[in-house]
Length: 295
Image 1 (cartoon, rainbow, N blue to C red):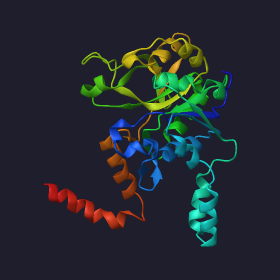
Image 2 (image 1 turned 30 degrees about the vertical axis):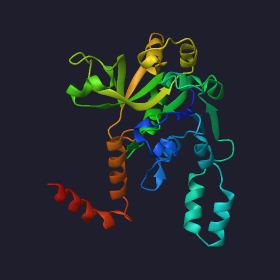
Image 3 (image 1 turned 90 degrees about the vertical axis):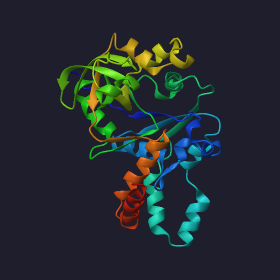
């Protein structure tokens, strides 16, 4: 097998309105809401960096300029920190700062769905395979989800979709894949079904918001008819691509927090806080007391 082309670019669709977090998202993009002390988007970018991604492509919308500012150098802040000898804070900012030319931003002028947002990145990505990370989903595991996907991709090529197991009775809520031949770290995908009717799901493996896709998806999305919600659906595009290219599922075995939902966002804050040695001692007893008081 010819070694597949390296995954160098990742797309982050960050144009969503975040209506589930109003009124906060009236002024603050949902991707900039903080889990402990970092914006949600930073966790997702960190995952991409850990997987070897070299270029970060953000598909933005109106009111999302603060995301671009966040990934830029803030001269006044850094000068103030230097003058006050805040070296630890300076080191932290430096470790999170992409280098010049590593970030690109493009606009999705209309909210026409995930498939359309991906298509908006076509000229920046070019004709090469790329990663796609949904910014609402942040992961916790010994090995990053995208890093594991890249490892599988380097063995199989093609397209990779990260999947997790859900309770079978909950399968109708998700995009579900069919399970084929076992691979190291995953399996070949035989079919993809978006929110199957109860009792008809081909498995209980659901797509969790991480993808590695070949560039042919752009041509498909360019002429893709609108689907559910009158939007251009990425799943519809992948189904067409699967007719000519292989898809594999990477079985992610960590924890995923949907920070686009209030419960997932709160759970993420608790989970990431209690694993911090500088925070856990201050909150552990209080959390237990809060839970006890609710009984």
